[in-house]
Image 1 (cartoon, rainbow, N blue to C red):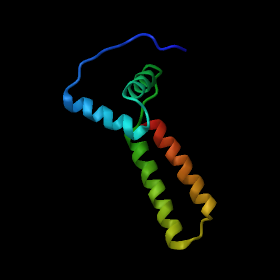
Image 2: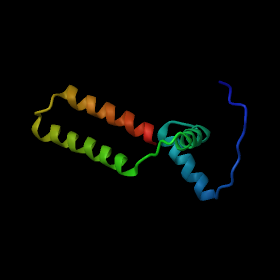
Image 3: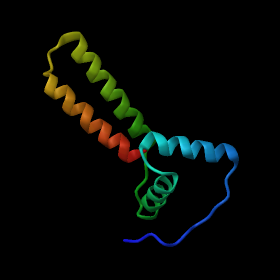
Image 4: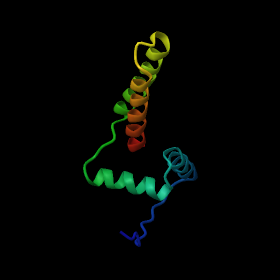
Length: 92
């Protein structure tokens, strides 16, 4: 699908810098980041900040558990890392 329509809005310099940084962290352009956010809201999908925080905490805890006990297999840890990274990327 060709994206040929432009939507403009005003932002402060600080907001623009925050949007650029967020886009860079997520591997998207600013336009792509804003498009995804707007379409998520339009479709009723809400990003829950607590969910994101919980996923980060889960990933850290599992990494620590593996480092301390070694009771999890390396494959299990890598799977958790991969899945939580994917989910966090979608939430960004």
